[in-house]
Image 1 (cartoon, one colour):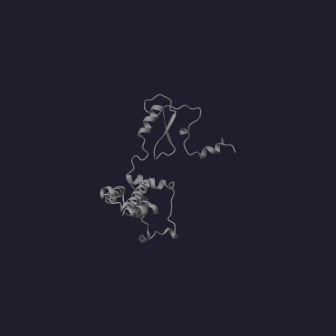
Image 2 (cartoon, helix red, strand yellow):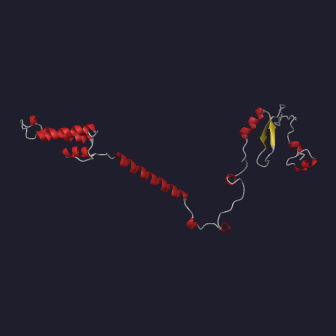
Length: 200
């Protein structure tokens, strides 16, 4: 196929004057500028595929002020952006003859999103509540029971309870009465164990 055939001249999409020839030098199209126009810039929305040629300084100035949507209303810009999602090609609703869905069956995506976020928050709160609960083993539970406490007791209450019971059962504070010394030994052992497991 010969691409230099005169038949191809009739198929051109642009006028010959605007097309760049490889050896042709252009001047900057900025008014009053005499430098070479080596850099191209788009002409605008209504002139797709057509360019202006500037020198480096003037193409920078032109690009800083260029706005493709200049002169369009906000609604027109929104419509253009919506059409850009499909490449400006027509689309149809799926279903029989593109019939619109009845309003009763439309899905409220914002409500679904809010519901999912709320469910995730509840799940996170439950997980934090589970992790904040103390894991109490059998020995720790038995030691707490020796002090008359349950698994919800904190360190301060364990210490306070131990001091109370030690004062009550210690022979030196009870006129040398050693009848409760075995109970005191159990409480001391329980308190020492609770210290080792981080309860006191």
